[in-house]
Image (cartoon, rainbow, N blue to C red; front, side):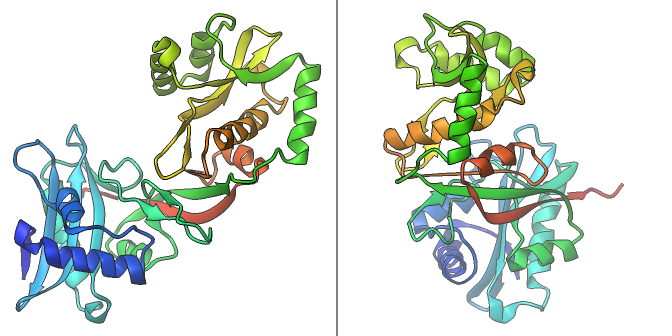
Length: 325
């Protein structure tokens, strides 16, 4: 029997979620309160959140969860799970289709992707540390969900790689030191942004054509002395020609930043790689124990991350189903 998820189901849903966290997925375990906050639809906050359980007798053997975007045009699958001993009998498909039916009421497409506002933190594998990342950017390609969603008609439209670097003993890679010298010869240095000295920050973002970056960085700069530190590449001691940051450290010890970019006239000097490695050094000095991030398989930015010593720890598929007319 497929039923809308209610508060009385939360204890069983928590048990199922945590079983999967131990046996199959990378997700961090949750308390009942966390599961209720995450999976239980709320009537008074305007969230387009939906969930279902599969009940057999008095036992919950699976559940599904998803939501819609703020504009209602996109549906998101967040989670579908059936206990392993009952798989292959159609329960997972039925749970997913019940969720899809709700999402199709508003959505034109259903995505499994990093834009999902319901974001579950997960443990980064192979680190030997309790290091985590706050969201999954798609379907874990090494897990059973990848084939499950393919069989439901979802198709891959992009691939994401999660990168990781332990910062506790981080130092500049040798080739980065050579690039720092190359930049110096071109009269470019990487330093902390000083609004009293440096110019061209807004113009940089116009060149990068990324309104989101521009809004976030200029909003941070508007805080004056309370702004978080920003690293910039500066030409001739004054003109900003690249940036990364702002720098921050999460309570979990993760080094965080908003973006990285170099003005098109100053590329090919290695400024992006120097900026990013300097970011790693600066975050380590601020107390960050590690960094984790994800980027598209074909995104040239991966060259910057890999030059800084970052390694791929997981690969994910962004998947989508388009509504049939």
